[in-house]
Length: 345
Image (cartoon, rainbow, N blue to C red; front, side, top):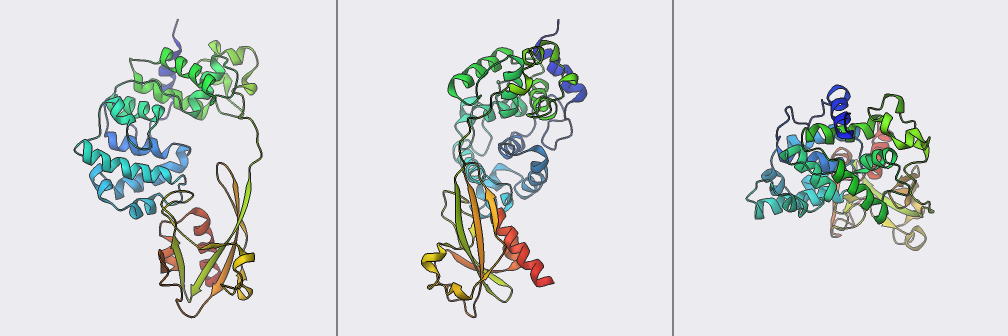
């Protein structure tokens, strides 16, 4: 009788994903740097969104040394729009650590990989398996769902107790032969068949041994994250313009949109006199959703005749096109694009 791992491996070879740009073309090691970049990008981001960014990022930073020698501004610019910008900062810091401590060569020991900024246990395991052919059990979000259903593990998977159970399953079921196909198969299964909603159980390669399928619990497992009210915040962004140029302000290196260029933010009630916002033009309001809160943004277009704020620290004036191409958050890009479209009409 085929084991769980055997069934996953056989299915992956026939039906899994084989054309992703970072995948090894053989069941051997590929460039660890490329695997590492892809795994960081895939944290909290779907494959379809990552592919375009990944290809451009590798073209811009083809080696660890090139990435380490780049400025954080350049790295953030290439990451702009992908979100969760701490990943880009950690990637840059890790590249510098690899140059300083590992002579620019991606480390081959699991503990050394785990020591790099931005790399947790599951990401380190995926890199070790895919790039170095040194199998380690993984447990990303998709795999948690597969295990919770197949082995009937109740409870929210990210609680310490449940996560410990799932890690024990991951270690127990991990394949040492054909580990790349097995690990990729787990990811593919969670992404394409054992999906959060409307799973395709009829075509699942392990449905005959799946406890949730047998007991009609597929829609109840895994248990959802305990609900809580998502806080909502509001801010006013000041869009200073002279002709076709706008002013951007560098955000602090840590926190939301750390190190990116954005518009100055104010409490409109407290600062309307200082910035003469009575004459400002209210642009279309927009809402940006973060993991832990929603941010309602009211852009205020302020036409000015002189760069009075040019001497303010951490500010620059750029043309609309240059600003759109800078390292900016998604909502700022949306505002700039709307201004460009408005000028074109």
